[in-house]
Amino acid sequence: MTSIDLVGSLIIGGLVLLLILSFTFYFMNASRSAVIAEAQKTTAAELGRVIEHDFSKMGYRVTTGQKISSLSDNSITFRADLNNDSSVDSIRYFVQGSGNSKKLVRHVNDGSVKKYSLDIRDFSVAAFDSIGNSTTNPQNVNQLQVQMRFSKEFQYTDRVDSLGAYWIRRFVPKNL
Amino acid sequence: MHTGQMLLVLGALVIFSMLALSMNSSILTSTETSIETESIRTATDVAQSMTSEITSKEFDLAVTNGTLDDIMDLTAPYSLGPAWNESYPNYNDVDDFDDFSKTVTTPRLGDFTINVEVKYVPRNNPDQVVYYRTKMKRIKVVVNGPSLENPVTVYSWKCY
Image (cartoon, rainbow over all chains, first blue to last red):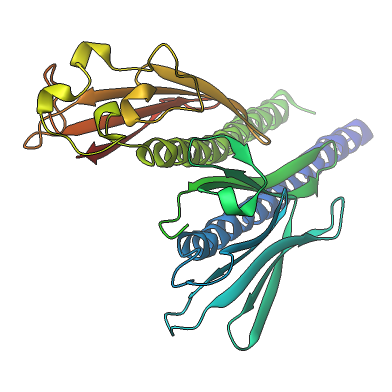
C-alpha cells in the first residue's frame, strides 16, 4: 500500500464518517422536534376539551347575579354549576406573564380553589351579542369565540422552527 | 490505488448517496405530512366555528318573529341568501349564509377561505338538496387553505 492509498482512504473514510455523524444529528433533531410538535398539539386538544366543557356550561343553574362577571381580550370570569352539585361555581381564565413566557391559568372556585396553568403563546376571547356584533358588555354576550396558540421555538443548526398548534372555537352557551 | 479498489470505493459512495437521498426524501415527506395534519386540524376548527355561528341563528326569516303557520311562508328555495337590508354579521336566519364566503387569518398557517352553502333538504334524505320548501336545511361549510390537498367540508343541519 502506497502513501497515496493511505491518504486517499483516510479522506474518503473521514467524509463517510462526517456524513454519518451529520445524519445522526439530523435524525435526532427531527425526532425531538416531532415529539415537541406532538406534545403541543396534544396540549391544545386536551385544553380545548376542558374549555369546551366549561364554556358550554356557562350560566348553568345561575339564577341570581351576573353569569359573566368580567370580560376582556384575554380573560373571562363566569359562573356555572360545573360539577352538578346545585351550587354555583366561579371559573376564571386569564393570561399571566408576557412575551414568550405566558401562561394560561384556569382558576375554579367550587368550594375549594383549583388552579392550573399551561404555557401558551396567545389566548383571546371575543364576545358577540345576539345579532352577531362584537361586544364587551358581559350582560349582552350571546356567543363567544376563543382562540389559543401554542408555540415553542426549536433551534436547528441552520434555522429556528416554530412548533405548535392553533385552536379556535365558537360557543353559543344555552344558558346565557 | 488499483482500478478494482477505486471501483469498490466509487460503488460504496454511490450506494451511500442513494441512501442519503432516500433518507432526505423520507424526512421531507414526514414534514409535509405534519404540516398537512396541522392544516386539516385548523381547517376543521375554523369550519366548526363557522357552523356554530350559523346554527345559532333562527331556521328562517318567517320564524324569527313567531311560529310558522304555513310552509309556504318560508323563504323560497331560489331566494336563499341575505335580504337587501341584511349584512354580515347581522344575519338573523341560517339561509342568510347561503353563498357566503369569508377569509379567516390564522397565526400559524395563514389564510383559510370559508365557503358556505345552505339548501333545503327533505327530512327522510338529508343529503339530497331539493328546490322546494321543507322544514330542514343543510349547511355545508367548505374550508380551503394552505397545505391542504383537499378542502375540508363540514355538514350540519337545522330543523324547524
